[in-house]
Image (tube, rainbow, N blue to C red; front, side, top):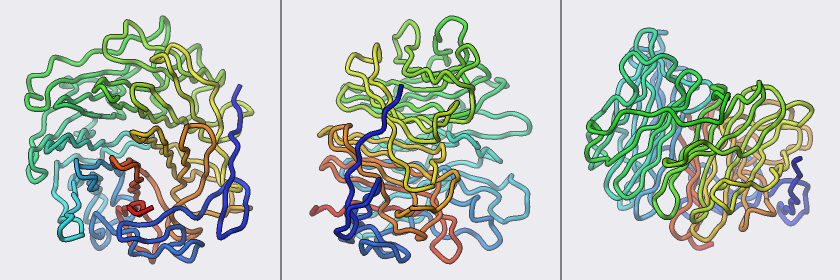
Length: 424
């Protein structure tokens, strides 16, 4: 059984139900909360564009697709994203993945670098691409579409300027789909959906081409994965990897957790309902896994739920539902980050519903200092952006960074980045 978390929120001095629109602000000291006419005072300057603008004729939703955010050792943001059908002619052969890093000296994002051409590799359930940074090493895991086949690839770079790509999935492997990637201490960890299995491959980033062949993650007896969502992999404070994903257990949606070395995946939460689309995200507070799940099942409302484990996934807390902002319901593009001090942040787009009693813009951001009481809102005011594919991370100082795709006409289109004011 799930429970709804208590939410105490304040906007402009007024106590509201379920939403906190006075979030601290942007990279140059913005006060947060109000891009596009919302409350709190953020301006367009608090949401610099990392991607440049879409090409003339390109569909806005095809530019900045699948945003993934990572921070360098100094806490500066970098993003990877897809640009599909770049000239808008309906031929996706010109589609590519790009990388853009922030220049702290110039206080602007560098010109985006093309990582790889990928065809129409857009995944409707997430997991199109994933960025990670470890020291000076940059890596992007991505899907590539060639003819009727999908493939999992990893591009790596020592400087963020030139990338070398290696195919991770076996040649002509059937059913390759959504993926995720993380890295730590020079090692990469990549997982992807493949048919009714979850596949894993990892090793030193300096020798990706020499990694041992991918393995199928061992699932509970009789279970398969459900490919209606994307897996999520993360590394803990000791550099050990873990992954959460969707299981098809007796035709019901169940979430699983696995680490390399586990003899079999462990169950996080069984919904007891069918395998509708879902989203899941993993982060570690120290070595303890934390999970956010975006789903609706049976008579349960469409919400984002959170759970955590203190015994490496053997048992999990009862999932707790984050409060929705009025009549809006979450999309499945959920993302989760944990700070070194134990704070957490969840971000997600909107998948439907209405604006009844809605106060905050998109993407939504839920925050908690101890994974218990949460505030839910957005750095953006209502109507400021039409945000998709959010990605969040904490700096070493515990400040939040958020990147997302914006497709709202009349506003800067592409990948926008917001950073919590460093003095707050």
